[in-house]
Length: 251
Image 1 (cartoon, helix red, strand yellow):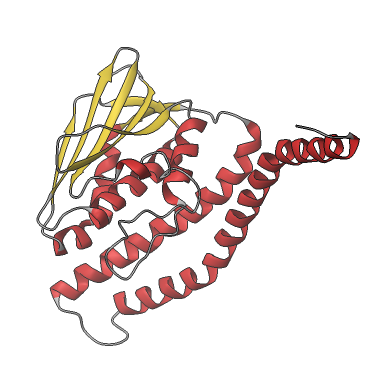
Image 2 (cartoon, one colour):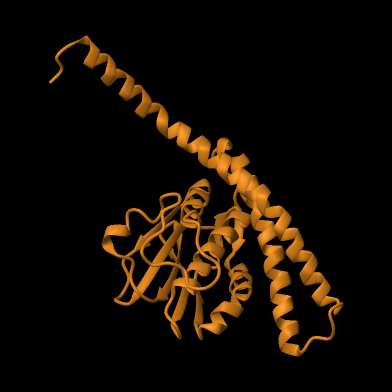
């Protein structure tokens, strides 16, 4: 109960603060992503230079296995550079509403799978591609970024010797793309939190590269920019499945 004008003024200030906070948080997020993208450019350039020196055999001859690893490093560093550029572009596009879309062939997902072949092979994981719907309406760079995030998560969080399934199919006027992996299910208490910025669940990534808690949040925003939706859906026991829903395109 309010006992006087002072309390009413205090409540009014609180309401104004709460109404302004979402816009402030959004601006802070964009500023952080912009700064993060710029800070990543210098170490990435050094990594690219080192990889090129190895590829040129400056440090000595390479075995076939080492050559394959260098090629994967080179490809991954180029992909990372593209992702950083896309992230900067994404921040610029956020204020512009939906992005321009075009018909995208889903076979481009093979490039994403190839980019993560080394960690998947190290965990003895098998990837199954079932692309019944071949095309959807999307912005190509954003879609590849989303798929890279989901597939990378499937590799790093998935079970040893497990399976990853990428399945695209039509559902009415939409295309659904399921990215599922065998592994420990996401706890029910965390399902509503995993798309929040910086949220890191109880299941941490394995390996040297740790998650930032931004990947799924950015992925969902990218899909929404393309007038679609990204969600965590129910899956058989022992599986985790994320679903992208986008408008279909003529086959």
